[in-house]
Amino acid sequence: MNYLGIDYSIKNVPKLDPDFIPFGVWMREYLREAKQPISIAVEREDGLISVRDTFIRGGEFHDADVRFVERFVKFELWSIGGFKVYICGCDDIANELAEMYSPAGERKFDYEFVQDVYEKDLVVIPCSRDDFPAANEVAKQIGGHMEGCRIGFDAGGSDRKVSAVIDGEPVYSEEVVWFPKVTEDVDYHFNEIVTAFKTAASKMPRVDAIGVSSAGTFVGNSPMVASLFIKVPRERREEVKSIYDRAGAEIGNVPLVVANDGDVTALAGFMSTGEGSILGIAMGTSEAVGYVNADGNVLGWINELAFAPVDLSPTAMQDEWSTDFGVGCKYFSQDAVIKLSPAANIILDPELSPAEKLKVVQGLANDGDENALDIYRSIGCYLAHTLVLYSTFYEIKTLLVLGRVASGAGGDLLISECNRILREEYPELADQITVTLPDEKMRRVGQSVAAASLPQI
Image 1 (cartoon, rainbow, N blue to C red):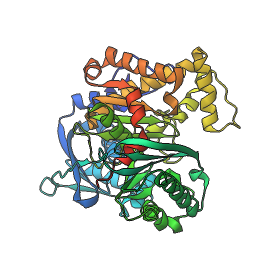
Image 2: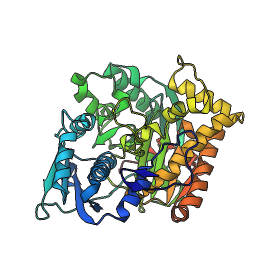
Image 3: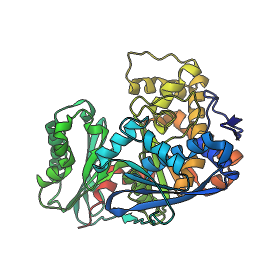
């Protein structure tokens, strides 16, 4: 197979998506003959800078060079985060990217996302070696603090969970249905969070700390971009940014720490196994990702891989929100199941919600319907080839697959198909990475209990 003059091959092609071009596999072949060195640095808050050295081919491969650098930078922006991109060694490509990632460019969504997260403009800067910045990375310890009386809150898109935890043992837990994604009034969100906090507090003699696991991109405890608050008007943005700190103040002057739910998932894995280098992927409404390193620490990255590229195919599905093509949310979420259903000859009622459509396919898979099972085989195939990409940016020993998509017979098949393809095509990754569902020990730790361990007293 050939894309932009680069030959690549995969033995296992997703049965329901034969045009799939895995970015990581294509990138690996592209780099085999790339000799012209370039360096890319991404700067984020507090002067933190991530640096990667790589290569381009040059000459007749200009289109492939631009495609590679743009997708590489895009992946870094959505995995690491940042508002300033320095590119050394290819000024012409840097200038092209500066036009793309601008208020009027084709990456307008990315530009506006960066403004919302960091309250700064996204800039792409061509620079010389003398002006290129040095790396400045700091991993941060989160969680693992079990002493005292703690509240652990997990803010999901369809239900909110809270636990009262005393010296690491949950003494009370509850799940309550709520509707954050369709509610405009931020007071609704605030009152629901406070109610959960107060319920847990009533089950303990005192409250020493509060930990929150929440979907979204955070700076400190502030949700800068979060789908939970997507309907809240922008003029009430400041109330959203302070919502968890304000809710905590209703309980008392105690330490409160908010962390991305993906990172808390990876933390729960570390707490239950004692092993680090965990990448957690929750396949639900979207693709939620978190990571802890070998020491169980987070990197301070945003890990928003739902919008990071995985497929280079010209026929890849467009994401309605970001307007980009071939990004993770269309491959590792309920959207992937719905996307593949027509190719599997499964006609879903358009009046059903996405969650209801997923349930229909899951029911068919649980009954052994081969067409439905082909959907899960295809997602497992996506995942195996995408691990070539993810393992370039993350050191992974355990890949935890979670979320509604991974439940039932389809989820088991997804995992087994991924592992089969890793063994066949990428034995070095099969030896390095364990792809698995959470075990019972991790389920006992739980998201809200892990969240409770976030603050240090």
